[in-house]
Image (tube, rainbow, N blue to C red; front, top):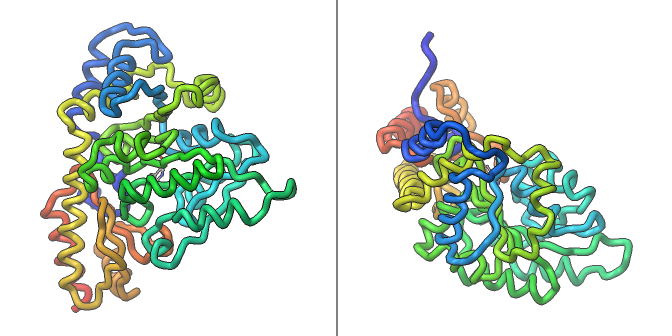
Length: 352
Ligand SMILES: *Cc1c(COP(=O)(O)O)cnc(C)c1O
């Protein structure tokens, strides 16, 4: 039997790397010998491009993956006796194997219980943050120090600029820093149509983990500190954690391909559009109940167990364990409309 090469919907990291990223990866290789550990021209160039993109003189670090980006960013904002407030479905809480706690030497994650509507959409609210912070002030409770939000959320929704501002305002009121897990930051910006600055530092975000992998890189995420004072010592933290690539150019050069000509935004807008196509198609299928309209590149729906089984038997891959939200279908930068339509046709078939 030949390997099934059809496009799948399990995760946006099933996709390969986009041609623009691969072009610059090859360029970085063609340049022969280059200084190591980030002293190369590609790292300089992509860092400068990120500074232009965010319209601020930020401090940028490239690491291998999102778990490291989040864990190290949070660790840099916390002492071991501090805590980080996040949503119950936050990747840092459910899918990083205790990485943030490990790298911060024990900072505890505190899960904020939002109102049912916000919770359903995977969002943290100012009220949830406020009640966690004001609940206890004694020394027996890990002192809240950071708020972490995911943009776009684990449920395929997007915080508006106003929502981020309101969270930042609450955070500032309680002397908390604001971290943004932007594994799908590009999809959020594509949805909002705002500038990257508007949804980050101008809205009160201190540190952003900007995801490259799911947006079309072969590998790599950028940790962006908007306040350079907060990144003091971060380089050592990255090195100690085994996240400092000696041939850094192979992580940083592909970013040039993403950032040049707004490829990152185009990739994300395409993935979002494919999720809309899938959602519209699913809404027309009796027996499928999308849980909410997607704003980014993931569609969540309830399907009868027999249909789920039948789709798996037909070779379709998608997850059911994410965020307790039923079946999750992720679209990627390269998802073809034909792939969406083929999935919809099989759904119709197995439901008949
Ligand atoms: C994919 C993802 C990450 C990063 O995961 P890694 O597998 O460690 O790269 C972080 N946050 C969210 C919300 C994600 O979906």
